[in-house]
Amino acid sequence: MTVTDEINHRFVPLDYVERPPNEMTTRAAAFYTLMRRRRTVRDFSDRPIPDGVIEHALLTAGSAPSGAHRQPWHFVAVTDPAKKAAIREAAEKEERAFYGKRASKEWLEALEPLGTDPDKPFLTTAPVLIAVFLRRFTFVPETAGEPARRLKNYYTAESVGIATGLLIAALHNAGLATLTHTPSPMGFLNDLLGRGRDERAYVLVVAGFPASDARVPDLKRYTLDELATFE
Image (cartoon, rainbow, N blue to C red):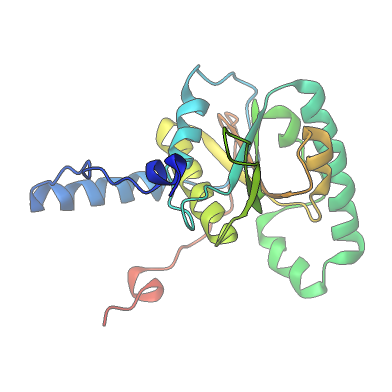
């Protein structure tokens, strides 16, 4: 066993804080109250985001569990106006193809209540775009006595999906609005953001303050009885 393996397999005490039952219930209910106000927003303000908010949200996303602890994600936070404009141009090109010929009639009918279309002004209006990439492999650099290695990552889609969920929750908790954008295909993000082909663009998270006149569809979420079964 190498020194690297000994470090990787070391165990440490769990940093856990147990709470009284009544506090657990209160905290669970308060978090639900917070998160039920989360909505996908398409009307953003260009107001700047306070320093540290995005950084801490990304660290929260990086705390997600992952297959074999390979942490198969990489986040690119884009604030440069020129890069945001390039992303919007490429995304709208794919969206026009989607709405014009790729999407089935049934799919378009499902989207109609949401009021979506090929135009994506939020990609240039919102102050931050966070491109989430899925990493298929982990690259371990050469060390003394050990050659460089390429390790396969496991349960990548599940791991990156959990991390993205934590990212969205962290941004909402901080007081920001978000939108998850998934133009297909998204290979243009690799090109525009300089990511290798061993990574796959997973989702584009738009983050910022909502516009003062922002409106959202009047949607209903499943009740507990509809979304869960207790056996």
